[in-house]
Amino acid sequence: MLKAQDARMLAGPVGDLETLVVEPKGAVTGIAVICHPNPLQGGTNGNKVVQTAARALSQLGYVCYLPNLRGVGESGGVHDHGVGEVDDVLAVIGHARAAHGNLPLALAGFSFGGFVAARVRERCEAERLLLIGVAVGKYAIPTPPVPADTLVIHGEEDEVIPLTAVFDWARPQSLPVLVLPGAGHFFHGRLVQLAEQIRRLW
Image 1 (cartoon, rainbow, N blue to C red):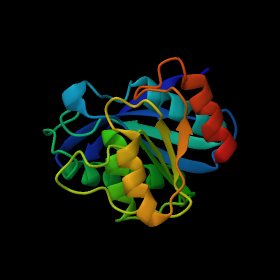
Image 2 (image 1 turned 180 degrees about the vertical axis):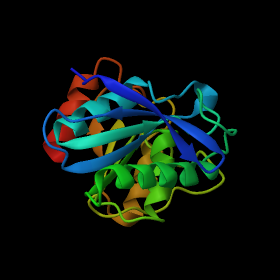
Image 3 (image 1 turned 135 degrees about the vertical axis):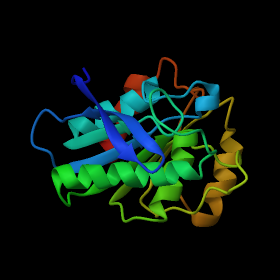
Image 4 (image 1 turned 90 degrees about the vertical axis):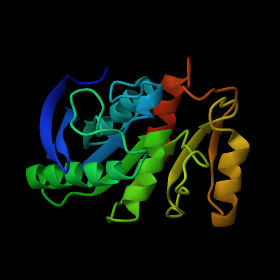
C-alpha cells in the first residue's frame, strides 16, 4: 500500500505548486520527483500511473515529490505545454534538496510528465530517469535524448503514444525499451506489474 501522503504548497516560479510528498517506510536514501500526464486531458498528481511509480520508488527508499505543475489543481500559473513546467520541477527539486540534502535524485514522469522529466534532465544532474508511456512526438519541442541507463516502459497497445514512435525516438540512442505486452497507455489492469518492473529494474 502507498504510505499516507502529505500535501504541501511549495513556492514555484509563477505561484505555489500543490505537491504530494510520499515518505519511504525506512530511511530516506534518495529524492524522486514524479511528473503527471497532460492536464488538458485531466492529468494530475493523483493519476494512478504516477501514484504507482511513487509507490515503487518509495519502497526503494526515495522520498517522492508529486507536484501539480502550473495551472493544475491548486497550483498557480497556467499550463505551458512543457516549457514553464521544467522550471516548476526545478523549483520542486530545490525544495526537496533543502529538506533532505544532496541525496541521489531520480526524475520520473508519465506521458506528458515523461516529456517534462526528460527536459528537466537536460538542466540538472539526476542519478536516474524513469519514463513511462513517454509522450514523444506530441509537442513542438522534441523529446531530447536521455542517458543510456534511463528506464523506459511502454505499453505494447498504447493508444495515445504509439510504440513505433517510441522506438523511432529510442533507436538512434540505442536505448532499450521495456514493453508490457497487451498494455495500453494507462496500464489498466497492469499497475501491479508496472510497479514490480520498476523495482526489479531499478
